[in-house]
Length: 330
Ligand SMILES: Nc1ncnc2c1ncn2[C@@H]1O[C@H](COP(=O)(O)OP(=O)(O)O)[C@@H](O)[C@H]1O
Ligand SMILES: [Mg+2]
Image 1: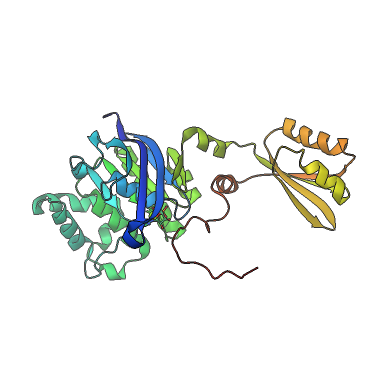
Image 2: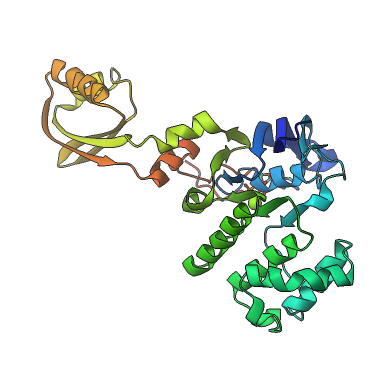
């Protein structure tokens, strides 16, 4: 167990079983290893269905992993020892709409085993922190989505946890609402809390997190893998070339990069390259085959595009659920 880390897990796998007698298996997490230092804001980024919520549930001991081990706040995974020091905001938390902020905190605080007097002594400052102090008596049913989410955060903070685990805290919020949540998380970092959050939105984690992991199909890409994301010099080159089809086909196999071909009047080849050497290499191959380059343009890839390069542009194949789309027979 490592007390220096808030979260420290190794080789975590999770296999869901479904179908008759649990014969259908689906591997939602594949040997995930991860360490989050105390006081850090860590962002787990990944498309829908990547396994982010599954990882959170394993970390919190809500579901059991099928392989791997680790610790949370120094207590072994799945033990109850650390629970009192963790605040959790589940995905799509729904609070009863008859509550107002005060009664909701009384209720959730009671569930966490806090005494009435402790709840009363903390709730004002927490509502202040999440910006709901002046709406404390407004019924939750009149709250905007952002206000509900901030009340959800308040609920997670009431027992003054060391580690906050937030599943898609900004999902469905407008830019103002997202910014408010980010402000609260920054304040929590100032106060020395550790935050682990999930998001499928790149900008969200980019703006607030100290470190990012990318989860895709249950496989986690950490530090060095993610560094590829911030490589500022990945650019997309588009070359307009003059070549007949057989020559072009012959030469494409020689180019050691992925080439996208487009024909709209002229032939355009698009490639993602990261330095001048690679550009020269492609130009040399084309010129050696006698292909003329009529024009060349380049564009720096956005972080979003680089993220999509890593996770693939489509989420369609991430789901193993049997909601088969009707396919046209070919
Ligand atoms: N209880 C479950 N039984 C079977 N499969 C599940 C269950 N929960 C999630 N899954 C599947 O595991 C994968 C990861 O889901 P989830 O962790 O919710 O992803 P994310 O939070 O990244 O969107 C998905 O393909 C999902 O369909
Ligand atoms: Mg999820």
